[in-house]
Length: 176
Image (tube, rainbow, N blue to C red):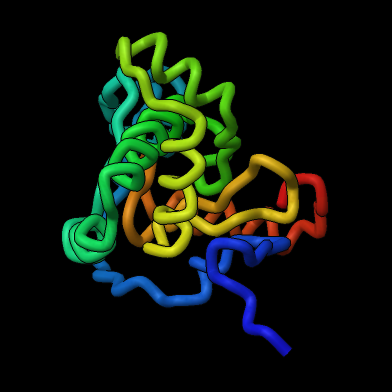
């Protein structure tokens, strides 16, 4: 029996959620205030809410230690494919952030936007390098990949894990 190469293995769900992420905890106080109507003497509890600003432009976070270890294993083709991966992850604002579509269409779009000239052959070779370095894992759906949230993420890692757990527990097979 031959051992399956990591770049050829397919997954029904992300294999990267099996490892626990170190988590720190802190309490965040949510305020309340009591308001009174002077005419009736009745009181009412009103919640205080905090408004949080966010960056509307796309951004991608990389986690230094594991990202750099993976980066050291990439050749030129892998680094070029990684730039397409990072660009594609950045496009997934407010969408399925841990699973992406990465096909020649995304390559063509990347080449157009950045005036690059990455060939299909280089991209294909680079994709194998990304798979072998653990940046992503192949999904059972053609052209779909699970992004390793321990290396690269679009948005907040804890939200992705919560969304993944919610999706996984909901029983919705199409969402997985």
